[in-house]
Length: 165
Image (cartoon, rainbow, N blue to C red; front, top):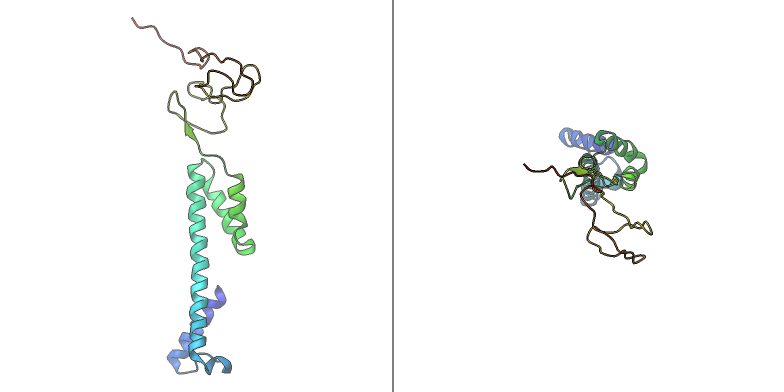
C-alpha cells in the first residue's frame, strides 16, 4: 500500500516537472497500458482497504450486539489482517457468542447459554423428566421417549403469585 502511494506521488511530481511520468522505457512506449495498470493498482488497493474497513466495522458492531468486548475483537482482526489476510475474521466468526434473546415470561434479555432466566428463574430449556432430552413448553408428550409431560406450574418456573385482597 505504501509503495502504491509513493509511486503515485513520484508520478505526480514527474508530471508537474516535465520529467517522464513512467521512467521505465518499456512503460513509456505504451502510455495507455501503463496508465491502465496504475489505475488498476490504485483501484485494487482501495478495494482491499475498503474491505478491511467494512470488516472492522462489522466485527465491532456484531461483538457489541452479542455482549462481547468489541474493541478487543476489532483490534485482533486489525492486527491479524496484514499478515494473514482475514484469518482474524474467521477466528471471530468461529468463537463469537450466540445472540441473546428475551425471556418468554418476563421479557428480560437473556444469554443463549443460560438455562434459567436470571430475573424470574424461568426454565429456558425444559427437559423430559424420563430421558432428560430437551422438549418444548407446548409438548404434551416427549418426542424421544413418549413420556407424558405435565404443564409447568407457577412454582416450578420460579414465579410466585401474590394473592389479591
